Amino acid sequence: MTLKPELQRNLIQTVANHVIQHAEELVTLDQAIGDGDHGLNMKRGFEAVLGDLDKTAALPTGEALKAVGMALVMKVGGASGPLYGTLFMSLGKALPLELSAASLADAFAAAVDAVKARGKSDAGEKTMLDVLVPLLAVLRSGGEDLPERLRACATEAAAATVPMRATRGRASFLGERSIGHMDPGARSSELMVHAILDVLEQEGKSLETNSDL
Amino acid sequence: MVRQMVGDDVPLAWCGGAPGGGLGTSVESILAAIDRAWSETGVAILVDLGGAETNSEMAIEMLPEERRARVVICDAPVVEGAVMAGTEASAGSTLEQVRRTAEELRAH
Image (cartoon, each protein chain N blue to C red):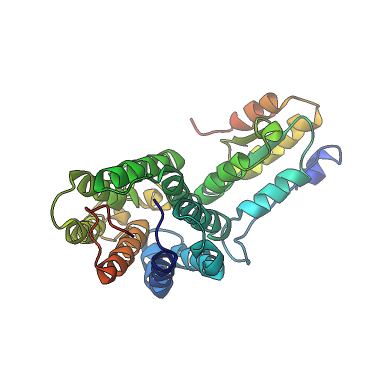
C-alpha cells in the first residue's frame, strides 16, 4: 500500500507539529521522572523530519516511514531516538501490500515487537509501550468505530501510566517517586496517535475499507 | 584521563552531547568516535546512561558488516571501565578480554 502524497505529507506534518507544539509539556513530564529532555529531543527530531518533508512525502509510504524513523534516530539524541526510530522504520518495513485493519495490525505488531526488543522492555514498566501495546490490541480486535476506539485507547492508556511504578529507563531509578506522574514516552505516543487520527478523520476515510488512501 | 593512564598506543575516542549540543547523545557522533578509535582488534564502548547505550546499539547496527562484530558495549561503569579497558587494551589483549576486564567491575 502507499498513501497519496498529499495525505502522506499531511500526516507527517501534523504528527511532527503536534509533538513540537507539546514539547514544553513533554519536558515538564520528563523533569518529574526523567532528565527533562524528552520534549527537547522529540522537538529536535521532528524538526529534522519537517526539514525533509517535501522529499519524504514524495516517497512510497514504506520508504517515507523508514525516512521518518531514520531522522528520529539521528536527530532525537536520547533513548527515544532509537525507540521511536525503530517504531517507524519497522512499520515502514512491515507495511502491508493491501491495507486492511488486519494487515495494519500485523505491521503494527511487528513494529511494537521491534520497540520491545530495542528497549528490552514490555508493557507494565511505565513506558511508551504502555500506550503502544493496548493500541495494538484495539487494532487487532478490528470492528466498528475503530478510529474512536483507538483515540480513546491512547488517551486512557497514557493516563493509566500515572499510577504506575517505573521499572525501565531513567524513571526506574526513582522507584516509588515515579508514581503519580504520566510517563513522557506514553504521552508523546498518545500525541502522535491523536494527530494521525485527526488527519484521517478530516480525510473521512475508514480504516476498515480497502479505500483509495 | 584514560590517555594519561594508558599511554599513546591505544586508539581512544570519546563523544557526548545531542545533535546540536546540550545534554544527550548522537548516533552520528558515536559512529565518528568508533571510526576514530578503530583498529583491527575492534572497539570497546563504555557508556554513561541508558540513552547512550541504546544509541550505541543503533550505531553498531549501522556499521559496515565487516566492522559490526568487532564493536562491543561493555556493561561497566564508564570511568573505571574505561580505565580498565584501556589498560587491558594497551597490553595487546583481544576485544573479548578487554570487555571481560571492564565488566569485572559490574555490580553483582
